[in-house]
Length: 102
Ligand SMILES: [Cu+2]
Image 1: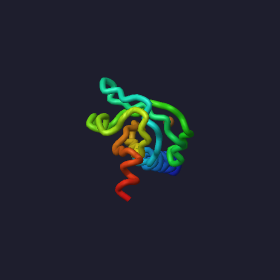
Image 2: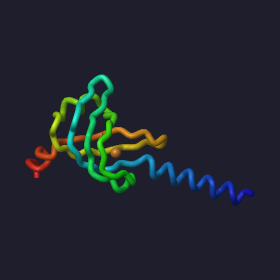
Image 3: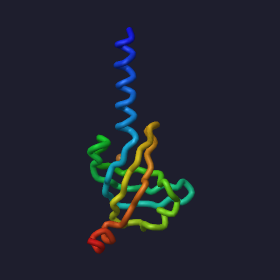
Image 4: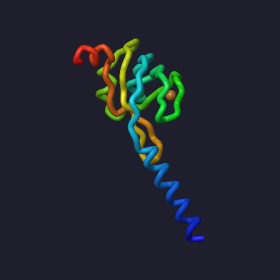
């Protein structure tokens, strides 16, 4: 019985580690929603997260990020998930800017 409990706990700890993570992704900004604090992005596959390419709304961690990008821009961004599985964009930059700095 105790052994079973140990196994269950280990699974939860593992799941926590997987969920509290950061994933790099790329995409195109379709819309900036200041009221909802979201960016609508058509993104490529995010392998670590097991997410295929799709179009979806992402909340941003900091509303200032909404001013850093424009509709139609190609962006690189970091998607962070917390231990509850909540996702938010924690960093974002226009891809052309990234190329200029290299
Ligand atoms: Cu998605």
